[in-house]
Length: 181
Image (tube, rainbow, N blue to C red):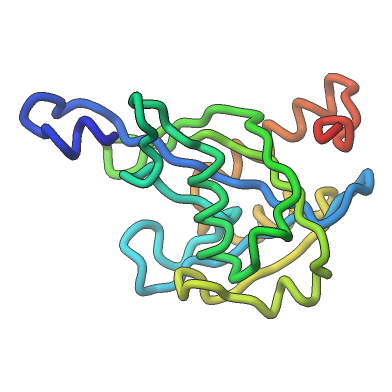
């Protein structure tokens, strides 16, 4: 992504890489997950639902030596989009790698499970950090797929992939909560 921005003539076919977080608000077997509707004023997927936080790896993600700081990027996105302080994000673990075919180019996303503490579902639903979203909804994992299907296609493609990734963990008899231990 950064090479494509710095030298677009040399790297025209590089796909951007981003981060997509799946926030859970407690450690129960059926944890509340956070999904938000993108504002009509954003460029990509206006009016569509997505798991927040998410965003592209940018120049701030580049570390000395050329390594990308994925954890730093998801923390910045978390604070910006949720309006919550870093202290509420107690754990972040990559769990999948996604491809979003948007705009015919495609974006690769690193899916991260985020453990958030000290915020109730009601408090989360009343927060909109950056203005990128106009509504925040919290639903238990067991109800999230039905919520997404009810939106009749107005969802960012990564939502389906993130839910599929979580479902695969469950089908493999891994306790959802054990991912964070």
